[in-house]
Amino acid sequence: MDRNLLTALLLSALVIFGYYALFPPAEEALVKEKVEASADSAQPEPSQTTASLEAPTAAASPMVLPAGRPETKEILVDTPLYKAVLSTDGGQLKSLQLKKYRYAGPDQKSHHNWIYALFSDSPEVHYDPDRLVEMVGHPTITNRVWEMRPFLADKPDNQQQFFQASRDNLELITEPETLTLTAVLPSGMVLEKRITFRPNSYLIDVEYRLDNPTGAVQSVKPIFNFGAGAEPVEFDKMSHPPRAGYYLEGSFLNLEDDDFEKVQVVEKLSWASVTDTYFVSAMRPKEEKNFSLAFYGISAKVQGNDLLVPRMEYQEASFELEPGQRYKKAFTLYMGPKVQEEMEHFDMSLPATLDLGWFDFIAYPMLALLRMLYPLAHNWGVAIILLTFIVRILLFPLAYKGMRSMRRMGQLNPRMKVLREKYKNDKEKMNQEIMELYKKNKINPLGGCLPLLLQVPVFIALYSALMPAIELRHQAFAFWMGNLSASDYTLILPVLMGISMFIQQHLTPQPAMDPTQAKVMKFMPLMLVFFFLDMPSGLVLYWVVSNILTLFQQMIFNRVKEAEIQH
Image (cartoon, rainbow, N blue to C red; front, side, top):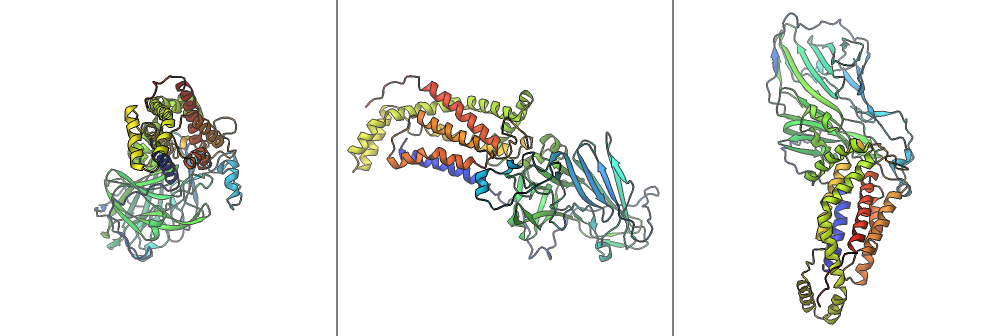
């Protein structure tokens, strides 16, 4: 391969790695966005579906509550998967903590290494090791809850509502349980929320019933506020902050922090969510295949940075509720981890929130294979090593072709130096003679680098697959590696990766280069060490094992004799 082309391709691959890690590609806007002048004055387009109205039967007549403000209570909902707290003050969901997922791993050092600490002025943060992941908003957000209440067109009913609960506490073991919250509004209408929890699922069903027992027609405009998603887990160093995600016409799309300076209205959705790296809160109406939703930005502080996190709001068009009529609206929520089989209970497309990037057609099979290997390995680190062996076996034909071509190119180095010296004043003649030398020896100048560059999509796909893999979160491998999803604070893995690349570089025949290019290539392992310092240790483990396997391949290949080159 031409020396300039070799250097350009290698540096381009490094740029691709770095850019993809630091600046994930923004999805193109494939939606119709309606942006208003400000978040305060914006009026999202309401859903065009017809409101579900019915005349209640005598048995279904709403309970009439005593006038005045009921006593505020908190209702605890305890399931095998989570514990939730609801308040009768507004009927709000105040907390939902996942029992199987802790806020941070057992090792406080695992969230950054000592080199990172040298360049960071962030103070050391202490945390409760028993603290669980919280699915209800960031503590600095004023409106931090999934409110589970409609707003009404007449102003008095827009005020805070106070509910009475059908149960003081719910403990789910085997069967679903329903909590009913009932409030009498100032207009005399009765609002009822029926919230159904499941013992072994992260799905929650919410049904709203608005009855008009008054003798007058009531004007109603339902607005359902679904809050600001999960609390960011600041100890997950590689985690991205909460952002809006939605499924539109077969594609998963994101709205980032900058998008929420003004209200964003998206139409024809299948479902909508607030998502981060490992957790997702999603919603969809039960009786609508497609719906419209407004996303608002709420000020928050995440990892010391001021940014906007999304709040979802669903509206319906205004309508008249006749005396004796009932309005009903039901939603399904998912509030939990990005575990594929769990998310599929909500919708088969919800695993798209894993957002595996450009090479998802490679990343999804690799993630599925990793999950298949775990029952055999009983350790996620061992599963990554087994995955590395399988990937190297599959890529061996390409690797062998690349090694063979690089050796042939190395054998041509003395002759190419002679030609470059001979024709140093005639670049055109020099290139012509070099190409003739390649042709005579049946060498493709791209043969050495192209097989290596074809492995770049595999690396990026593995990076994309391991980043949101909640199975690796806080999982130990061996020795000092206590968290495969965090960077190696000891720096042992990145250094091992650099050493293995350095040895591999010296075992591989190199094409002819000028002194400057040769120095750049010698420093390439060191550059990659710094690039991998803050990468998840599970990804660096893959790279180290892959390099070691490549070293053995190269040592074996160096014993194979090649035909003599022709001058």
